[in-house]
Length: 484
Ligand code: UDP
Figure 1 (cartoon, rainbow, N blue to C red):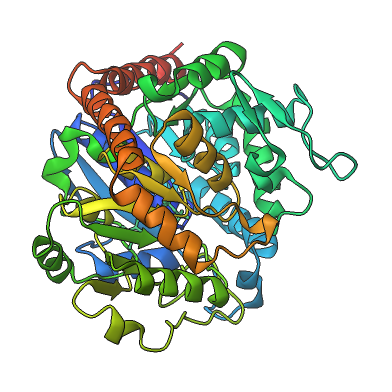
Figure 2: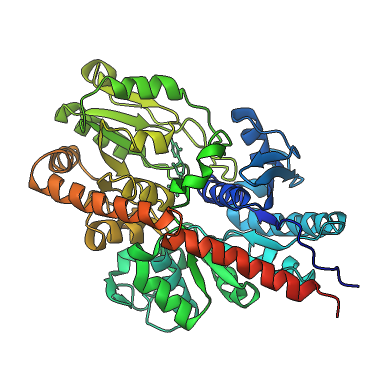
């Protein structure tokens, strides 16, 4: 028998893939929904949960009050030891995660039947969550953690609406709404030669499952990606742009709930930035998964030694929990690097990126162009030097440089297999730090920053979409659960 609809708060399950770039936007969404009165349960694997509990102030199953609602964490064991060979490849890990994740989620839904679940939200790489939602007659939505333009590219590829490069025709351009993407600017997961073509396969599974979700939430905003949001909403599923989530003013009071996998000495980093003049520091980070060849790190290192700029550089000490990099070796820096950059450089394993990008001493960001990093920098008004590796990063780099006007192209994606030399690093750094190009990038970045602030303010476009999304859940939940 179906349950009676009550006026109880919405109870929303968020199921996140255990990677930093997926957990961050999902947790930010969770805080927003909780602030607006929902009871949110955040679910991911125990392996990620272990890191989250160690680094942050998180206790599993504790109900944390957030605004008018609450947030609870729940972790499930994927049943694998840390050194299980299944973990060494996404090709073996993703199907395993589906098997154990489905069982866990189905059981959890049964256990929670006293207070029915109003909606389940997953991020990509877990397309099976929609199937569990349908089986249990629970409304479900997708939180897309890349751009709307990239979503449109995958949608077009899946439905064969435009021609994409292939083994037979590797160098053709792709017309995507008003933008033309060159062969090396297309999210390369869908190209046969990608190292991570399994991720292309899983994303296609998600695109195939779009009929099962009532909408797709995207960490973007109307003013930034209007054409693509409109295109997908008209041709496929309803897109609700609700970002930039990290800037939503409602989550300020929940800022102590953090999903970092790595601990950083925040105070020491901010103090160091405080000691530097305004717009004088280059921030460098390649995200949590990309691991550049050591040779490339050397060139960046020499570029910094030769350029005399101040810099804050994040160099990873270990691979992320969802990625067992076989033979991962931490990077080392050129001889005499620390002596020659003494007083003007800081190398860390992790930093509070939002705070760093918001700091007035930061002039520009050398980034791998992950969508979270791109949105954080763009909407904090920070120009970028784009250094993508693969996947959507190459497409994001194209948009940052040619469409949003906030970036200078530095690297061009791992498929090109080109070493960016130290002189190029030095030249691009000086262009981005001072002079007419720097000024142009800064002005554009400030324009996007202001538009983002307006979008997330109460009554702004993203805020309205978030409210409308919650109304959608209520209406669907009522329809599913009213006694007939
Ligand atoms: N991040 C951070 N500190 C660091 C490096 C990264 O807080 O030292 C955060 C960053 O702010 C972003 C996320 O990690 O929210 C990385 O996501 P992104 O999509 O940019 O890249 P990915 O790691 O998924 O490739």
